[in-house]
Amino acid sequence: MPNAPKWLLDVVEKIFIPKLPMMEVRSTELLSPSVKRIRFSGDFKKLTFKPGSYMDIRVSDTEVRRYTAAFSDTKNGLMDFIVHLHGAHPGSLFMQQLNVGNKINTSIIKPHKCYSESAKKYVVFGDETSLALACSIFPVLKQNNDQFQFYFELDEENKNVPGLLNLENYTVFPKDGSFRNEKWISNLPVIQEEKWKDAHFILTGNAKSVQSFRKVVKGNTAAKIIAHGYWLEGKNGL
Ligand SMILES: Cc1cc2nc3c(=O)[nH]c(=O)nc-3n(C[C@H](O)[C@H](O)[C@H](O)COP(=O)(O)OP(=O)(O)OC[C@H]3O[C@@H](n4cnc5c(N)ncnc54)[C@H](O)[C@@H]3O)c2cc1C
Image (cartoon, rainbow, N blue to C red):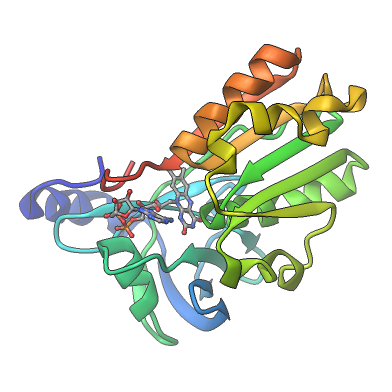
């Protein structure tokens, strides 16, 4: 529900939110002109964080947007968002304006179900909106000695962000529409190389890129696909 009447969101907030902890901005950092990391503090002990878990955040009187917990440390009451400041839109503006000391309401945390202990190989694809998911799954992949490959399609100004986030095994592609081109996708190493044929493919970010990538993986491999478009051109919220 990306938007709803103000009165309805007010009622939801009044009934449910008092049961959930407040989150206070502890620090903010611009990793590039358009990617911001926001660290919140709060009592998150009752929340269960899994890779890719996300929250619905009320970003204006009438708008709600989804953001992923990139990092969580429930013992010390910390949680990070990594947000794409993509323009003058409710979610992007709200996140841009958040500063140290600001308090916002938490929402129920929703599991993404992208990681399964039984799978040992992962290909994780996405854009700026997927960096938080990548950060949340990376420590688990490392800890479990899984094989993994990150693919990111990013704006030029964001090409260094995966490095700043200390991610490993990543390839950055320019955001030039290549991930809409099925022929081009089918030549990628993760499609061509035998070792990825039974991997789990986690595809998030731009819905059209996700759709094309999904089609190619489905047509060329027996891999399991977890596909979730995070935004669709011309559509507000998802
Ligand atoms: C499960 C889930 C988890 C998500 N986690 C994150 C996260 O951790 N970090 C994050 O930044 N985003 C995340 N997103 C994506 C985020 O919710 C969307 O980008 C959202 O549309 C932003 O809201 P907005 O108000 O800024 O723009 P909207 O009002 O929703 O959209 C306005 C216009 O901008 C376009 N648009 C939306 N997002 C982008 C973008 N990133 N780049 C270019 N154009 C865009 C839309 O197509 C529309 O035309 C997640 C989405 C989902 C579904």
